[in-house]
Length: 413
Image (cartoon, rainbow, N blue to C red; front, side, top):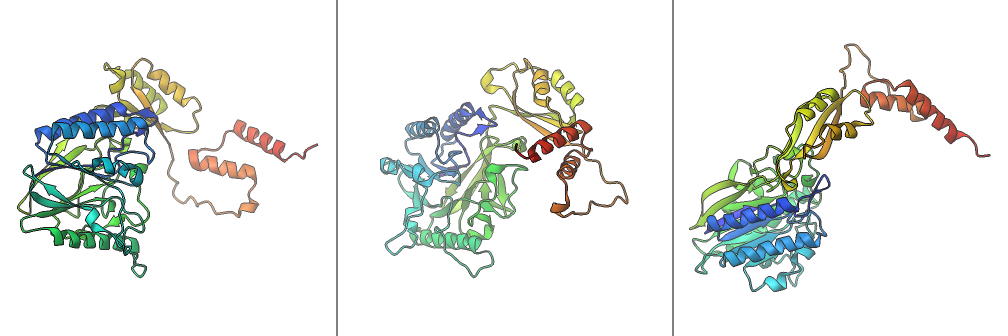
């Protein structure tokens, strides 16, 4: 049986206010072809299908059109989708009644049995080959919220230990269902220990509520593959080949410019993992940083003016991050950058500004903290400006501030 693992599609994401519908559609078209050429039997999507919990009608239509095309082109394909922290579990699960007779399974909520305990039968799904024989069992665990896993208040890291206990109980149940020769795989949307994240990526921030810093030891050694979502960089966890983030199919920030976006494909047979490989996803719209390192404004403007114009259409025009090193405020910065880019057809997504901060000279004493009530407003402004720009505040700005402060403090007539 051949399995493909993907995650973190973030359909509907705006990239610095630019719509990404074209990029997501290109990825889904590529995925559809890959499912066929690789003869995939099972598609696993490990959370964050959408970027927002309340996705647009266009985003929802894109997902269900893909599912429709995928099962029509591959009638025996089994699809398992779990929710991530960006998804609304109930909204993503809402079409389940229509999908019950198909091979599409969406798992967003951890259901309870009559005694209020987790009903692991609802998330333990048989994986069948083309002949209808069960070859493996999948623990289709979605993003776990408090109440989905045991509360262990006496533990030093109660939430992480609770998630570990959840996976142990889920494995024990799946193990009771499996027969000799059948494998167990698991899905999860969480932040594993030692996972490498983007430099400044709010979409893969640590998830509070118990799913951050989960150890690889949370997954039983007899689980043949763990399909993780949430972290956008494809990577192994705990040095184990079978515990993996496949990464996001599209770069979600400029910190992901050099990521190799991919899906993971592997075979499950006779309770063994075989032929695991990564397939790189083509980038339909590139991300570009100019210059490579933060530089002075004249150098940046010169680099932009020398930049060759993009020759493609508007849908494939690169996203551009301009990196500038300044000595102080530059009120007309965006206008200057846009002027330098005129006619080049790049999409200016971000101007990343850093300020030149000289190191303290040897022997220079650090600023002594002063009581807030002893500081005059002008003194506060001077210190803030000096701290941010490493230069004294200009005299004209001081005069303007004092004028405003005086007007504010004048008693009403």
